[in-house]
Amino acid sequence: MVVLFPALIFCVSLIHNAIVYEYQGKQTHSSISVFLMGGTAILGGGILEWFTWLANPIALVSCIRFLMETNAQNRIEPVLRIPKSNPKPRSHWLSLIAAAIAWSFSFWNEILAAESGSTGQILSFELGYWLWVLSFTALSIGINIYYLYFGRVLTKLESFSNGDDVIA
Image 1: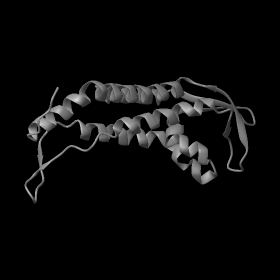
Image 2 (image 1 turned 180 degrees about the vertical axis):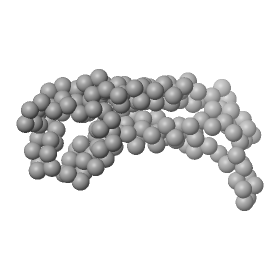
Image 3 (image 1 turned 180 degrees about the horizontal axis):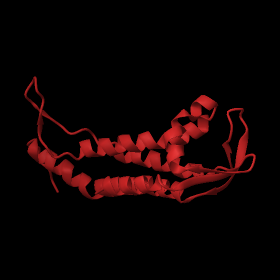
Image 4 (image 1 turned 90 degrees about the vertical axis):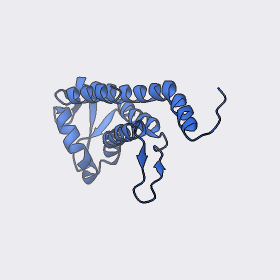
C-alpha cells in the first residue's frame, strides 16, 4: 500500500496538464509529454529542467529499494549457503530527495522554452503537476512512516534471529 497509492496518483497525474507558460503565446504542456520528453531536456540545454525530471527515476529506485528492504523472506546465498541480510534502509532518503526535487520546481518563475536558450514565464502549474508532487510526497511520507513505526521492530527481530541479546 505504501508504494501502490503513490503509483496510482502518479498514473492519474499523467492524464492532466502540467504547466502553462508564456512563449510566443500561451503554451500548455501535458504531464505525459513532460514525463516522456523531460529526460531529453538536457540535450536542448535544459540542465535544471532535466534535474527536476530526475525526480522520476529517483522515486522509482526508491520504490524498488523499499520493496527489497521490506521483503521478509530469508534468503540464502547460493554459493556459501549462508543467510543474506536485507539491504540497509535507504529508500526513505531517496524518497525525500525525489519529493524535495519535485517541490523545488514550484518555486521557478521561468522555464526553458526553446533550444535556443529562450525562456518562457511560468503562468501556472496545473493539476498534473500537483498530482505528480503529491505522489512523491505520499511516497516519502509512507516510507518514512513505515520505518518510523516498523523499522525498530525489524531491527529487534533481526537481532533476535542472529542470537543477540536485545534489551527492550
